[in-house]
Length: 506
Image (cartoon, rainbow, N blue to C red; front, side, top):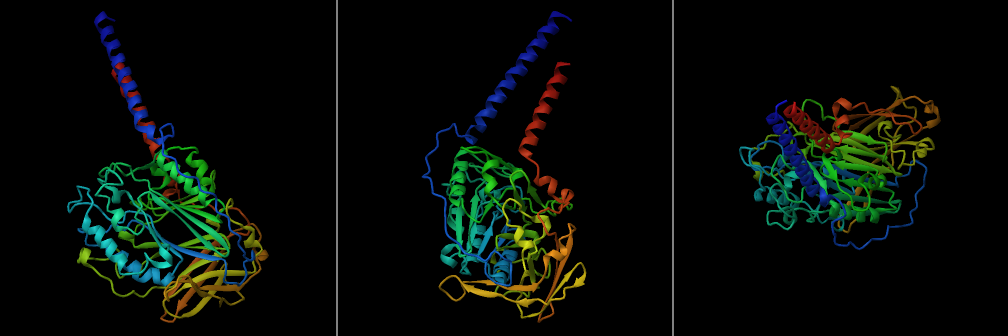
């Protein structure tokens, strides 16, 4: 090898090494705020909550021990898109919320669309935020239950080009229900238990334009706040964590504890963001995180798919059902854009949610008293209808259940005004769970029909025990929810740089 070629090779190696070292320096500088070696303002510690509760542990025909809440996400209210968005959201407020009449409604971000007419430039649109607030102001939801009925938070579209939470472009602070961009901690105390909802804000601290804020993060300051809120929630019967971004699209920093340690006290992680992706690969973006013991449940968007999710916590066993708004067309045309106004509800088929026995695909062995299913004396199901119920039929493994279902529901006053009530439309049927304690999967089928002839059929696979039935949704979103895409991209970038360097040196 000539002396000239050796000199060129040595120079190339030194230049590559310098570039690598400088890149490493930039990486550590960019990630330093994620960790607690930076000086953080102190947050006054909050003592864990402790309240005495009374509840009959047996799942009988009693209508107590039930908490309900509704989850929606990704409204994408737009001044330019003439389908879905605001018209779906207004139907949700006018039809779905009054039908279910839950204790709480949570919306996990992307309240507005934040794009221009050509969908090329991302920016906060004041008109969209005003339309969102106007839709809410046509109801009493923000004020209901002393301000604890409706909770919202930011998504990545809500922080496009918002360079700080104090920015004049941060319209969330002025036009949302919560107002606090950092999220919230809401504790609901019931006679039968305490249930905490902890919302975190994964938006980048300096809100980039699309697509650069497709991934979110919590830096050390955010993690300090999250730790404080989760500490306040300690002792709750269940803790529900809410974030716009799924865990797979987040980067979590560290204050005192890693995210994996903090999330062990969480039962369910509620999120949105990915909509339903494309080609069916996001049809069921759900995953059980066995190491930490929680379920991560992404919900489809309100924008195009008009979907919402109803949760029920019955004697501390968590169940849910996905419901689509019964619109004549989805996505529904909206030629009036931000001027649309929905005045009346649309007819809604029955919403059926079986709470006992629980769907065996979604058991929470580390957080639920699952022995109560085996010790129960009644099948329990919630049936919401906008007309009187004509019939509720129960079948197990295709055979009509010998005991008819009877109504044991109630409507409980929570606030001071007449419409501040929570509906618990409970139907029960006697059963003997030992008849099905054979280690196999059984199916409970419920057919509910209202007086107008609208019918809904619910199918629930169940087992008597604590064995999770595989969800088998890897091809429909399960694999995506189990990944860490930030780590994946970092690894692929490093491998690419090494390969390029080798190619230059060979």
